[in-house]
Length: 63
Image (tube, rainbow, N blue to C red; front, side):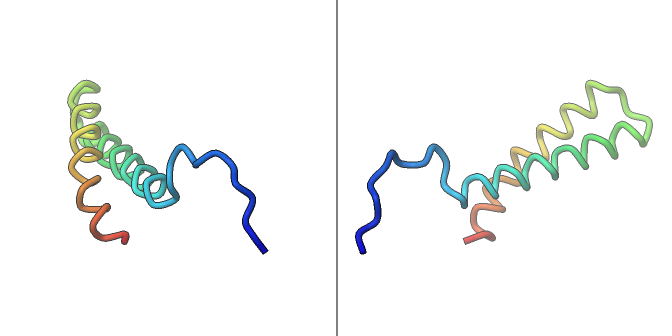
């Protein structure tokens, strides 16, 4: 039975999972930075850095 042809998905499942886990990691790191007494700006910067650094690692781990 042939599969119906539709538009290609915007994101693959692999990409969506990697980005979702990266966002969760960034939120955890940012939250922990804020709770440890850091300023809001430092917590945001730490969260963004953690999310960005985790993307290549997660891409290779989740294959």
